[in-house]
Length: 399
Ligand SMILES: Cc1cc2nc3c(=O)[nH]c(=O)nc-3n(C[C@H](O)[C@H](O)[C@H](O)COP(=O)(O)OP(=O)(O)OC[C@H]3O[C@@H](n4cnc5c(N)ncnc54)[C@H](O)[C@@H]3O)c2cc1C
Image (tube, rainbow, N blue to C red):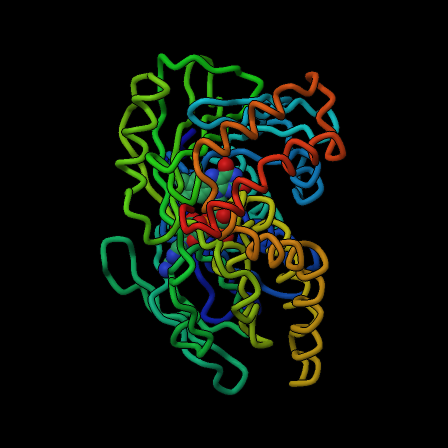
């Protein structure tokens, strides 16, 4: 769904809250700020947030997604997901769990509805405008220099509090002294594929060193007869995700349209500060995606709400108030997901080393558990059975 009208609400000279980036993190943050009715909120993006294709598989776990969304999610559901097929060349099993349903969503639709809600609440929405440079704090204000997408300067804007929700690697915070390298970006490529056989109520995750070293390939149902198929590889792997996707399509079949790319910041959770008391980071700009699953939609929405809460607590306050708000944000995030992500990041290198035949063996063993009975308790034994082979290969240098 594309809205061709240009959203260029007149910008004030100054605002209380400036949110840069209208992805899930920025949209949720802007709505939370506007609902608090504390001051002017400006939302800026270099493109129309609903422009398609959104670089994403669009898969979410339904429960956390519903909880994180400021609006009812039903209109955005493309497909309810009841099963997950885990596969490697030579073995597969289908995990059916009614306890954790998922969904494939229409992000373009979601972004548009959230932007409309933000605007309805009084947020100044200014799109097709790029944030170029953000100054450090001076007399309680930061100044943002902007350019149109055609490269023309569109002036500057002063803000008391800024939320950086610009996604991976934009580095808006660099000049403001919160620099983050792009060291934790993993490349991903996807395409919409027709003529592939897939279960419309299942997502597929495939492991294989030929096509997705250190990562995985996905098949997510997108619309009737059409799948969103993609590959994410470990950073620095020898196979590029583009080449990996080509190989995976040979294995799975189907006719792909054009390839689209993106990057997911997901290897070093907790390494970067979440803000400094007047500049806050949320979503991919804060590297909050799950390091193993590489999911980041819900994480972005959750951190967007938390960053907005922290910005509200800190606005107009002194250094102590700002530090307390920052501490609160860091603690809330750590409790919500940070601790789990740090743990997951630790086991990720081991999982990346598992050979294809061990994946196949594991999935075949798991496939022997009757459908619908895949509790964690029942799955532990099949997992333990492949561990000796894994450790033997590590010891003998074969993995
Ligand atoms: C190929 C791929 C597949 C994925 N699949 C899934 C999935 O299935 N499920 C899942 O949960 N996650 C998935 N992710 C991750 C997920 O897409 C991100 O984690 C999520 O979009 C992060 O949201 P965000 O709001 O932080 O950033 P983004 O969605 O990246 O939004 C950032 C916004 O900032 C704007 N922006 C950037 N720089 C500037 C600037 N200088 N000035 C103005 N605006 C700017 C951009 O235009 C953009 O609209 C995938 C990622 C990729 C790349």
